[in-house]
Image 1 (cartoon, one colour):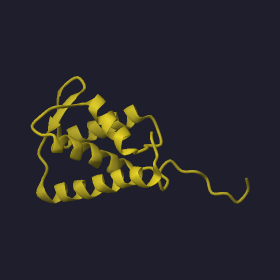
Image 2 (cartoon, helix red, strand yellow):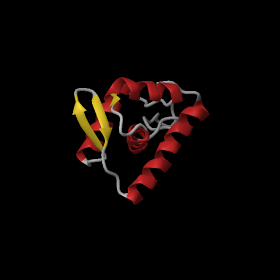
Image 3 (cartoon, one colour):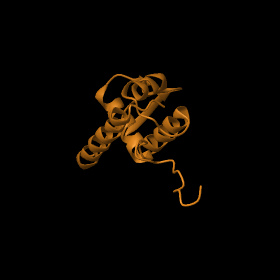
Length: 112
């Protein structure tokens, strides 16, 4: 329709990639020193009702790859990860963004 805004991937109910990464990182660090599987991360997303706007497995894979490259998450085997090191200032931002991502799922009742 004419005059209608184009639908964007990152709307009001869909967290940005930085928020998805923060949610995953926070989830892994909350369970430290235990290892976390990708299946557990998918379950955590679904439990909170966070929608990603795309393929959930792909978005989680992208987020994990980024976090591993920055040392905040360590890959210990195929589909298994554990907590890495996070500087104190970065940890505060990660917590804030993880809460923001989780609140999007709560507000929208959106399941991805």
